[in-house]
Image 1 (cartoon, rainbow, N blue to C red):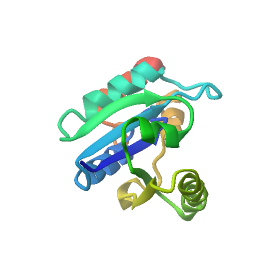
Image 2: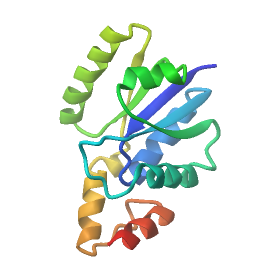
Image 3: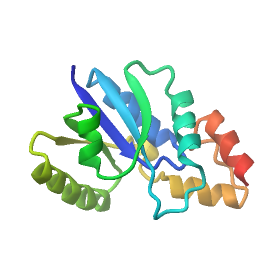
Length: 157
């Protein structure tokens, strides 16, 4: 069984994330979405809320599982028997950052590869930070997140 992980903070999950999840899930037997619990950040949503949102918005995508993790990504990959890390790229600046991590992870775990998926052009500008900023000032986020997530974000503000 070919297992991949798609790690991130997903604070909140966006339509861009969903696009990557849908596409990646067709390439592997099992796609584990790993919600990072980063104590250095102050997220809008708790880890449990982010996991629950992802479960809800991916329930129609076969082969997708959602969980959370702390610590090293390579250790998380080992814990779910994944040999592929999925990362989405929006711009050249994303590539430079992600390439450094992909090479580092490969040195630490030679059996772990990173697969980059170029974001659909409809989402190339989209980030969770953008969604949070728009929502904070009562902007329309309906084009950027699934309706379920939109309501959760609006409830926070």
